[in-house]
Image 1 (tube, rainbow, N blue to C red):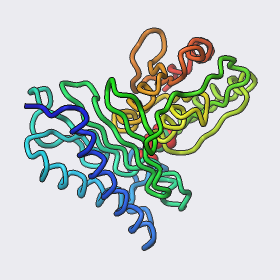
Image 2 (image 1 turned 90 degrees about the vertical axis):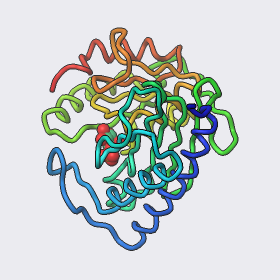
Image 3 (image 1 turned 120 degrees about the vertical axis):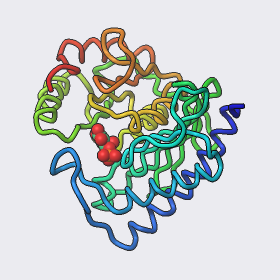
Image 4 (image 1 turned 180 degrees about the horizontal axis):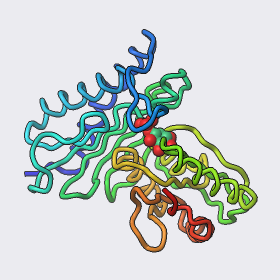
Length: 269
Ligand code: IPD
C-alpha cells in the first residue's frame, strides 16, 4: 500500500537533511565545476552528482519499489504510474550559488503518487532553513504555518524570478523583465527556484514567476507555495510547467498573470 503523505514527508525530510549535510561538507572541502550540461553556463559539480546518488541510495533502502526522477541521472526504479510512489530530486538547486559560496542552495525532494505531488521538502543546505508541505495539510517552516503575502497591488509587489541557461531564452526573459520592472516594486533573482517558491510561500517576496522550470525545480517548492495558499499555475489557464510558473497569492495572481501574458512571457525560445 502507498504510505500516507505525512509518512512520505518524514522520509523526505530525513533523506534531505542527510543530503544537505553532504552538500555542505563538500562545499567546505572546496568545489569546482566538473562539466557543463545544456550550455556553458549550466554547470554541474561533483557534489550535484554525489548528493543525488546518496539520495537515491537512501530512498532505495527505505522504499525499494519506488521510482525516482533526478536532475543529474534522470529516471530509475519502478515504472511510474503503476500505483506507486515517484520521488523527484534536485540534489542541489542553485548550483551556481553553490559554486560561488552564496548561501542560497537547496536540496529539493518531493514524493508523487500517481502523478500528483503529495509531500515535499526544500532544505537550504547552507543555512538549514527548511520548508515542508503535505497535500491538504498546509506548508510549514520550522513549525510555523505559512500563509504568503497579503499584498494585492502589483505596483507595490516584490517579485522573484530566474533565468534559464540557454542564451536565446535568457535574452527573451531579460526583455520581459525590462518591461515588467516599471510595473512592480522591484525584482529579486536569488538563484534557486525551489527557494524562490518557498520565499513566496512565506511572503518574503510577494510572488514569483519563471519560464523554463524542470519538474525537479518545481515539485517540492510548488507544493509548499500551494499549501501556503498561493495559486501556482501557468498562463492562460494552463497548469504550471516548463512554459511558465506563476506563484502568487490569489489576489495578486490575476494582475501578475495578465501583465506577463501581455508581455508574452511564456513565448520566445
Ligand atoms: C536553476 C535555479 C535557478 C533557475 C533555473 C534553474 P539549478 O536550477 O533554480 O534559480 O532560474 O531555471 O535551472 O541548475 O541550479 O539546479
